[in-house]
Amino acid sequence: MIEATGLTKRYGEKVAVRDLSFAVRGGVVTGFLGPNGSGKSTTMRLILGLDAPDAGSATVNGRRYRDHAAPLREVGALLEARSVHTGRSAFNHLWALARTHGIDRRRVTELIEMVGLSEVARKRAGQFSLGMGQRLGIAAALLGDPETIMLDEPVNGLDPEGIQWVRNLLKSLAAEGRTVFVSSHLMSEMALTAEHLIVIGRGELIADMPTAEFVQRASKKAVRVLSPDAHLLQELLAAPDVEIDAAEPGVLVIAGLSAQRIGETAAANGVVLHELTPLQATLEEAFMELTQDAVEFHAAEPAIEQAAA
Amino acid sequence: MSSFAPAARPAAGTTADHHQGVTLARVVRSEWTKLWSLRSTRWALSVTLLLTVGIGVLACAVFSARWPHLNPSDRARFRPLRVSLAGVNLAQLSIGVLGVLVMTGEYTTGMIRSTFCAVPTRLPVLWAKGIVFAAVTFVLSLPAVLVVFFAGQSILSARHVQISFSHPGVARAVIGAALFLTVMGIFGLGIGAIVRHTAGGIVTLVAIMFVLPPILGLLPSSWSDAINPYLPSSAAGTLWTITPDAHTLAPWAGFALFCGYAAASILIAAALIARRDT
Image 1 (cartoon, rainbow over the protein chains, first blue to last red):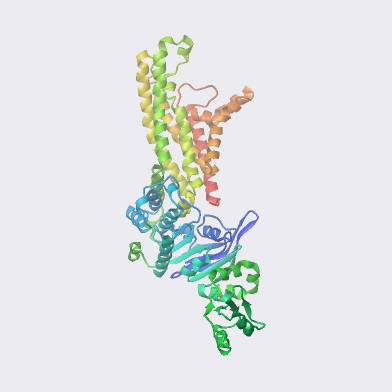
Image 2 (image 1 turned 90 degrees about the vertical axis):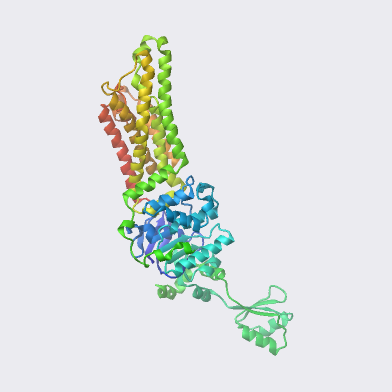
């Protein structure tokens, strides 16, 4: 359980995070979404007490992070920037962190195996690829078997196999009832892993809702039609509230009409259809639309925030 | 994934027992692991000890070999204790720099974020680093200065110009050299924590210890003589000599002042670490 209340952080003149309030609950993967520079990493640093907020507060499992007697057993965090001494081996890095909490060597070895770094455990972390560094960071986050896991851009630099591994790991952690909070600037990644989304832009909350609802709200429904008689169909369907995109020959992307209506119109007029596909806006598109003008959306849809809070 | 062992963990939301938490003793163990798991520290410490012994033995051997050819004024200026401890002059620089690195290495690599996530109250990290580095420096440098003192004096005894360990002040000076190096390490650690950048930390340390004295020498002598005893570099040198330079404090008074400088650097570092963003 992570709770942020009115979090605000300024770096000089620049406001990195403004009056941010949200709660992350256990049992599901919660995605923390925003373009680069929108304040995701700052928010995570504020939650961990690495930076001090100018206003507001953040608690994890009911207390400020620094007030926990055994923080690594409460929260495991992977920070975006490399947070490892380049001269130390993977094993010794984890072992040094483990010792602060009296965690034993067995646990360190177990985690190194689990993240697939056994072969390079004695190599210096400075020689690691970005992907290996991420695996080491994930191992560090899991050291204390924490109830809450917070990962900043965990799939950055991972190969497809590694990405798949992280997705499965996050889901299994959430399935155990843990709180899993994962940031990303990639919508597509979040669509595959997160059930709930907290979206920020320019340091402000844009949305806090289930992923499915987020896509639905933001997407315009459209239908893709392939037809040898595209021209004819276009004329038949033309209406004031119908938008037809005929960029490619023989392909129409139609907004404002259901697939059913389009199919019926075509049949009634003897137009041959080769394809009739309802399009779901991708999360990427939904996100772009929402963040294009974060402030305007914010003002227009206050109901979203209140419902979520 | 099954190795994640969900069965072993308490129910969600259970607060950790206190015996599972962070304690100063645990942070000390962590810092011990950190210190020895870096190849650079192991090398720097070994080389420092070898040079401390090597330079002292070499200096004694040179004097011993040249003794018949030295003129009376050179013979009069000869200080057997100081010559055998010649390597300490170099060791103070490398121990001080290593102290800086123990702290700045964390900041420049980003390790400090992992460290402060594990110990979010932060200050135990500074105390633990100080305890570990001081203990290691003292435990390693004490045998080094004892070895080089006795080896050096036995070389000089061929010319009957050696000094005995029981001579007044000698035991204090030899053991004092190890104490001085220990406090020098702490001073470097504090400077490293204040400055946070390796190059800046080393420059600050070198400026205070080695650049300030000659600059002070440019002032009118009435001023420099009055100020000189209180410089960190002058205070640092009092304990491990029995033939003090002019315008310095008494051995233990000077050492106490040097400890004060080191303590001040640590306290400033503590105040900054507690409130700075990381």
